[in-house]
Length: 331
Image (cartoon, rainbow, N blue to C red; front, side):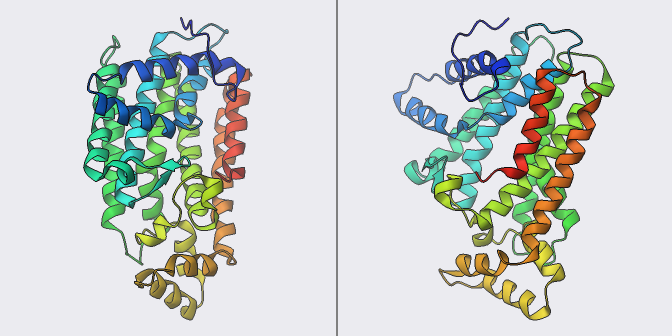
């Protein structure tokens, strides 16, 4: 049973203490004797944000209960493992994108170089599996391992399909499921299966996670085009700069007049320093931004519908609110 006394005041009241316990465990597990390593670990703490994925582990666990009772240590461990895995992907993503800003702070790779950032990401993954092995059942370890494999496959697929102007929506959705939605789906499944053996509820929460995870990435891709760095809090325009087609660009290439299609491809292939801004100016007034947001809303609606079968509870209400927030967010 969780006994933490501190909590994130922005989190729902019914999971504040659990998130505080996750935060404590995260910091304790990553404590390192070499001062240089600890310095990097301390810096990566700013990447934690709103702790969406650990919150989903906890909320899924609470939402599956037939009668309210405290979550146990396993839920806190699983939430921490998921967060470690996620932060590792952020550190590695910043290397791949040559990003300079993350959570309104300077990235590890920009401060300390790509080598240190890659090694730190590896350290986070190593700690995640070490912590997960402390659980009696290894079912979670196998699921986390399978999911990290899928995430890596997604990153590799996206890397292979850079500057592939024929990338279609089917391939795009496969990539974003692997690189983003799969871990969110797993967070929900882990939390649920730790609380219940009811396969119907477990699968419903997993589908919820998959749908909101996909919607989350679509909105993230939209904000990479339409957002402002000061608001979003990270480097923007990286998809354009790296030649990674996202849903607004895919839709534009499929529906725009041939001259506009050729213009977009020409800008994406251009070495001009201001090509990112020119692409933004071309896409923002188009119908493709609205199309991407609509697809995200459809996924959120599906996610909300899948968990209507769960017992009415504060946890289910929070899951519904979190789904609604995804398409409204600007950061």
